[in-house]
Image 1: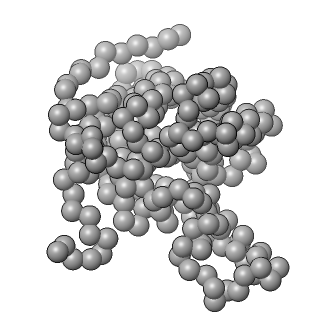
Image 2: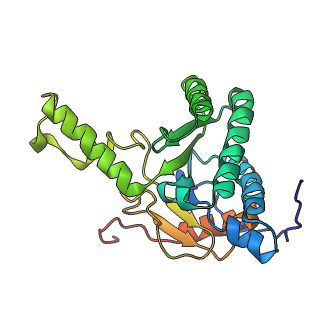
Length: 252
């Protein structure tokens, strides 16, 4: 079954200065289940429409010159959801990875996967490895997909890796700096997000990029993810461009 829903279009591009876009946008893909329930549909239908929204927004971010896009697709806590919902999400992930393998080189889009991949099926892990291998040959926009990801777990993972290096004599505890520790995170080598977009209206980070979002500007909208559009992205970017980013300092 293919679901199609009409979305009101509005010209909001004029609000955006495309000459000074955020370098890195992060998005919490929230509201799929609520979107479906409000329409009397199973929650899985919301994930299917939300996956199409992701394709649209990711492609548009690439087209306008966003260098980094990071999306929160499946958290460590999401395993608690009904099995049919988890199965649908994993099926959609498989479909996306298969499509990506065929199009990444053509579109010059790199994929990176952040989180603990071990609970995923062997088939999904193999597809992730194939995407990683293709990305190593490319130079374009980097889209990071967080799967079985939790911000606290990421920090613990990094701390364990640093402790292992200390035990091996490779580094000393007193050598640790914030910059060094970032190399132990899943996001090593990726700049912190400039803008975090939270559809669905919730006013929390939900364990997403806790280290990286220390000075990230946050945009919250009541629009649920399946209804998120280019126009809403323009509003988020325009809001970001009106902010005064001082990073703890004083404006001169």
